Image 1 (cartoon, rainbow, N blue to C red):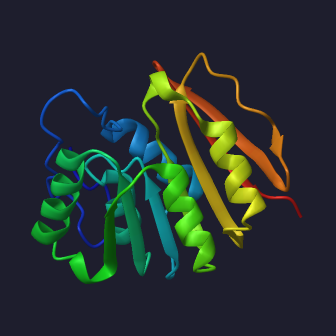
Image 2 (cartoon, helix red, strand yellow):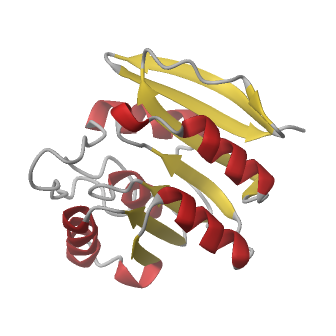
Length: 184
């Protein structure tokens, strides 16, 4: 695994030891950022189910100012912290060990908005519709923001969730990727 582009282009990322996470492949990551970017002029990101932190780190490398990384797995949190330290990105990040719903509740209480939200839950625990509903209800997505929902290709996601509209959907092998933006 590596950073595909931006200020940290080509730098290696550690993967989470064991089989508790499924990292986004470099091919899928590059495709995602071609759909949403490819580069950014600031902004705040949220990487739920962060795993190794690859998606949030890619966003930082491509211009996000700050990213919050959340995962409930201790090994994943340690890996994210290690990758951020190696890439000298710790001052641009916050890392929390928490589950996704609680993290969204906490961010909503702080009235935190995001330009980019990355959702990549374990394929066997697809909660994407519920998470999209919470993000919409809490109005966490900035007006020009996007949500990347990575999922098993067999999962059918809704075209709309409240004010969120799916603007693009692609399949890469066993992986599906849906991009949501605010209606408007």
